[in-house]
Image (cartoon, rainbow, N blue to C red):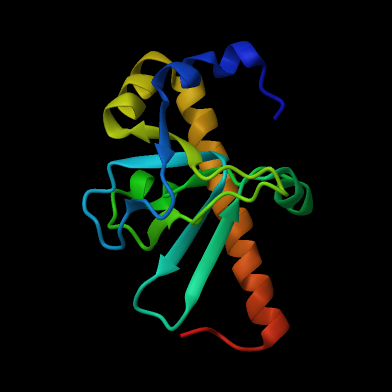
Length: 159
């Protein structure tokens, strides 16, 4: 991130911490409205497309996964939130128990941004709202590229 910490301070004031217990669902596919998005800070989330056979994506905030990706996971649920669309997946805490050997927690920590907070951010701090939306779009672009690469590598389109 090239943004200065002072530029990001208004974001910290509007994000709300939420700890997810093992197996706890953050939201379900087709939930309307998509009234928040989440920034994954610690732990793992499982994103499942419920009408497809076995389509699961694990989002991991640990240091090894971040290093492998080259960046943190970032935002989860940003597309539905920003597009005011139904949720496209069910997202839940992936942990069913901590792993003491790896030092992983039993709970997952996310920071939520809801619609009222985003409206306040757009009104009072448009630069920060832009930075947040840009980060969400960058993350969506990375994930779309990952899917595109899987299609090219396997020479098939998942249905």
